[in-house]
Length: 69
Image 1 (cartoon, rainbow, N blue to C red):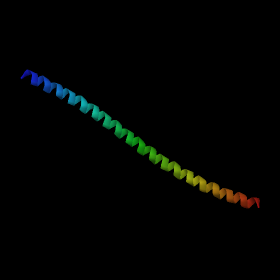
Image 2: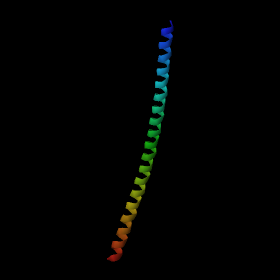
Image 3: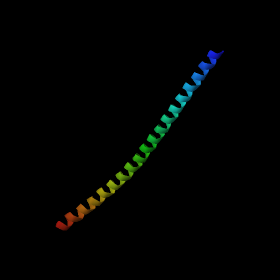
Image 4: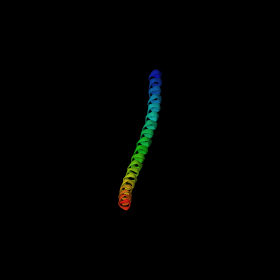
């Protein structure tokens, strides 16, 4: 009986260690996913700003060309 208890205790320790490692990995993956999401939102915002600047530059170019004529 003593051997079975030792095996059971060892299995519990291994399972516990594995569970802790898995939990830590899961948390890291969640943080990474959140960081990717934030970066994506920032990229979308920067893209909008660039598009606005392109429109503004096009208008300015048209005005400049008209004034040079």
